[in-house]
Length: 104
Image (tube, rainbow, N blue to C red; front, side):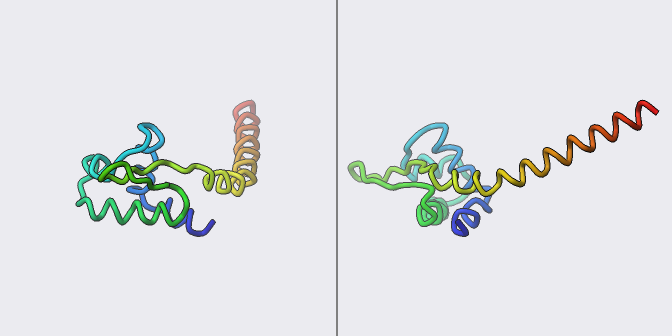
């Protein structure tokens, strides 16, 4: 899971995942057109995502198509769920306290 967190740390990689989620499989050149960086830089980001298991690569003629592989994100979601509950309870408690103060 450490690789997944490291991969998600980059805003560029998160944007790549979003593009693949929203628009489906794409070649590097089409993805690179969306960024203000060279194609080799986008390829390096895709390699990090691939190594983390977040994207898959397949050949289609001369191109390599990249697709989202969302399964590793379920592990992150499962890990984060208790923290979400923690903060939800804290915010609910804060809301209650603010309501009490307002009533006084």
